[in-house]
Amino acid sequence: MKLRTKSRRVGRISLTDLLSMAASWGLSLVTTASLVAVGWFGHATHWTFGLAGHEAPHGDHGDHSATDGEQLTVDGPEEAAPGTVRFPSVEALERTGIEVVALERRPMVSELHVAGVVDYDERRTAQLSSRVGGSIWRVEKHLGDVVRKGEVLLVIDSQEVGRLKADFLNALVTYESRAEQLAILEEVQGVVMGRQLREARAALREARIRLTNDEQALVNLGLPVSISDYEPLVDEQRAQRIRTVGLPADLLAGLSADVVTSNLLPLSAPFDGVVVGRDAVVGEVVEAAKPIFEVADISRMILSLKVDKEDAGKVAIGQPVRFRPDGSEEEYSSRITWISTEVDEATRTLQVRAEVDNLQTLPVAAQSGLRAHTFGSGRIEIGRRGTAIVVPSQSVQWDGSRWVVFVPSGDVAFTACEVRPGIREGGVVEIVADAAGDPFERVVGAGSHVLKSQVLLERIESGEL
Image (tube, rainbow, N blue to C red; front, side, top):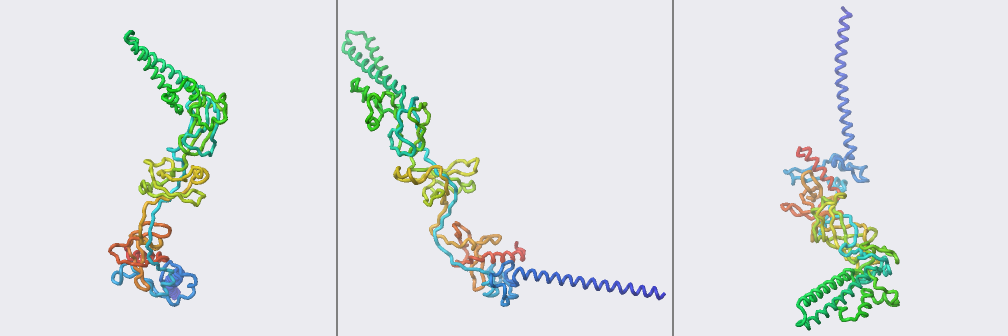
């Protein structure tokens, strides 16, 4: 009996002790966890407890006794305007690094930055070829040479040209012969049959048609031939004139008559420009319609700009363009003259074009200025303000539902004011304040994100977000 009683007593004491020990351990664990949480939060805020998540400026990590225990607050509607952040002291405000800047008023320009390339104006670019086959008799111009309209680039020796010239002279003689026969018959029409007169008139008309066709054949080759110029001449004069037709006098100077044949056909520049392509050697056989020379007017060049399809709706004909070629400090100004009706299938960009006056004088333009196929960067002006209110880009913050700037409302308080961002340029942005709001002249620049974070924190804690 004594032994059993003692055992029961020992069992009761052990259970009570275990419960007490468990409660003591639980309390110790809670206390330890609380101390760890406080230590972590204090380390994260540098023991200021004023700006959660914001590091104090260098040099302020040591002595914070002046603000220990101070709490940053966001005033409610009953205290101040909604979204007002109030610091406990001026010292606490200074440690945040918040800076207040004045509003700036200046012109603002909104631009699209695009890539581009320089090219020739296809309306002023010509690939020249001979209309008949033959061989190159003489080459007058070379790559890079500046040419004027009508200047001879090269001369082709073609038997087809000689044949067409002979046909023209023969047709002219035949026409004149038919005209004389008709004139004789009309003088003695009383003694000749009417059928003879009709046949003579028909023959004259046929001769005239043939002469006109032969004239047109030479004109199609680019030769300045006119029936009226040859009718007053005798046969020897006609042959001499048509033999060198189209050839400039300076080219014929010093050449003997035996060298110059009736087969020569000059190839001339259609407008003022520069030779940008040449595939011609003296004696080389050329085919009809094969390109031999390429001439381009470089006094006006084309800018081909690539606009992202997301910005396609922002561009319009007439908008100013500024273009700077790669590796150049010079900037060229122009305006959009053409917008493509389709987006490029490969690059998914919209092509727009602008015309640029290169240089006024061709000899100078051939040595400097814009060069075809040069890449560069362009800026398309899509908006402009004569006078805009601008602030640093960092001043405008999104508070979860609207764009705001923080305006000083006392020595240690700042109020969020709703604004509408406008044109952005560089590190500043245009703002348009709420029409119902009070005007202000200063806003928070650096450090505005600290105020936004505090406003968001309070809204989260209150259940608004």
